[in-house]
Image 1 (tube, rainbow, N blue to C red):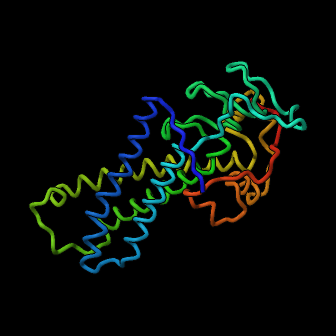
Image 2 (spheres, one colour):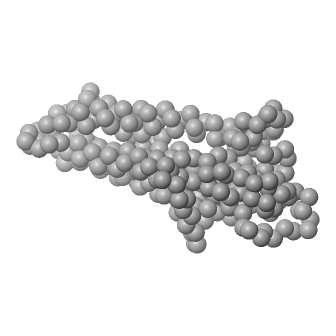
Length: 265
């Protein structure tokens, strides 16, 4: 497995991804410390819940790292254009390089990206043909982790038995209410935002339409080509094995050499 790293030099992007990582780090540290481990030590919850939370947290940060460092589909300076596909290529009027149709020039990154969906400052990277599946994973695992956090915060207030072995002088014990309220607020914001984003991304994948194409004036011409959800996700993820759709630490290989060349940006 060969994973190439791709970094975008953008201070604003670094700030945004640092905020996302900070939210993940906050909940990964305080939820186990305030809720999971104390209740597990007193026998209130099984070990499986603790393990599941750490697995969800690990998959979430792995998807974040891969989505932010994976090559989105940047085109080389001198691409090899098969003779049979030359009619499906065009000249970019910004960087004066040949690119496949449905590619887009990212003004933030300064290069063309194959089947670019959008530039996301929260991962400091473009979302394109080669890392779209990782962006989907990030949305999905963020939803799972946020919902898990909200459920644990709710149970801490209304369901779990009171803890008996607390040291009342500890900072986390004295400020538990405030810390969990911040965690719940983060969980609500992240779950709501990621659910909306995941839905729009899935709708675009099933209709074979990028976000940029939806925003274009001819979006009505593109939107509406519904495909089988299995084939659509297999094409995006680069494999028909559904279990591999959920694993971020792997490489992606396109299922077919040709692309759907239609109206483009």
